Amino acid sequence: MKVSGFNEAVAFAVSKDERYRPEGYQFIREALEAILKKRSKAKHQSTSAHVTASELLDGFRRLALKEFGPMTVTVLDYWGIRNSGDIGRMVFNLVEAGAFGRTESDSPGDFEEGIDFHDAFILPFLPPDSTNKQTIAPLQIKLPVS
Image (cartoon, rainbow, N blue to C red):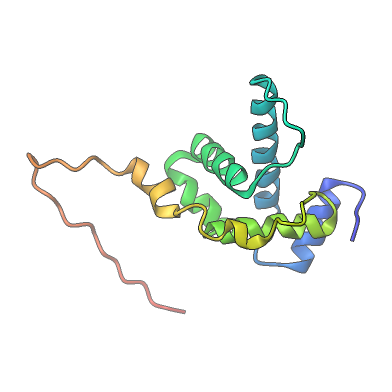
């Protein structure tokens, strides 16, 4: 399906796959734009404007940390993004809507193992381990499963 604008593409994607919020799609677009802007500033003259899955995931990670800091996981979870596979599914929802392009070799699977959310978004904000300080066990709260 081809749509006329990015907002229409997002509306189509959300109607097709209700797991993800529109804000998440907008954020993916912002990450893509940041990557292309960085390329432009670096005078990186690529023969293609194609951005690989690993490039997009790295740009997504960097922008998320910059924008949301220690709240990144909370924000992404609210948008329905719980792992890098979700980002791939969202990208391909936008491809199907005609908002993003792809090469023949691109697939949603390219995103599956890209980012370990714990390592990328939680570890940077944990206090450093110290052998000189007493280790306090993390608080464990068990929530009822619904």
